[in-house]
Length: 262
Ligand code: HEM
Image (cartoon, rainbow, N blue to C red; front, side):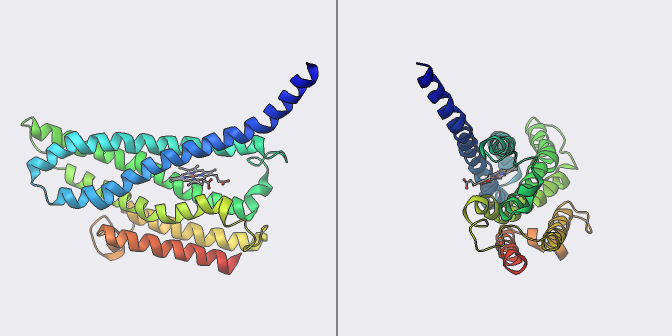
């Protein structure tokens, strides 16, 4: 009996951390597809369709349809983020070779650099949802409901809608390389084609270029580089085709960065 209990304990200790990590991974991807699926719906379907509706129909659709889609969108973003952090915490227990999360060496390996880049992009997208898109969309929804109830239109609603649109197209662009790094961490970047433990100077060059690309794009989306009007550096946000092309080009650029540096 005692031997059986000891065996069970060994199995639980061995399998529960792996099982938990897998559960978090599954929930993370489930929440992620919900979030990014709705992001693509907004960008590729809703925005072009709303542009063809008259103001009355658009206000109705904002009230009844967009408000519901935004609920699932922002809470799926929160769940994706939370389960992503839980994967990291579960990995800490599950590796058996000590703490990954607090062991600085993991972050110096190819998979560590890959997931750090993915998380940088994922957290930026999460911040865009909760700190830019949702506050702006709250104004748009309040305005639509107010006008439907016979009130005056809010003169700031159009500017709020534009701010949300830029951040939303930025998230579409970021989503392509973000997924490269999310999936690439376990299935590509650690697979032997790249240096498993890049030197400090290689990592320095990689992070410098990565931070410059990330910051320039995000500041551009926030209107910090000369405002929010269409054209100029914001041509990448002018329509969803430009955003898709930019996302694909950015994914190739990041892949080439890995090929050249690591
Ligand atoms: C919001 C911040 C995010 C954080 C902190 C995060 C964190 C993580 C972590 C730690 C992993 C495990 C990497 C590994 O060791 O294999 C992972 C994998 C993954 N993540 Fe994220 N993630 C985030 C956003 C997203 C988003 C927005 C998506 C969109 C779908 C996503 C999709 C995935 C996928 C598909 C995997 C790979 C699963 C696998 O290969 O088994 N993540 N993420």
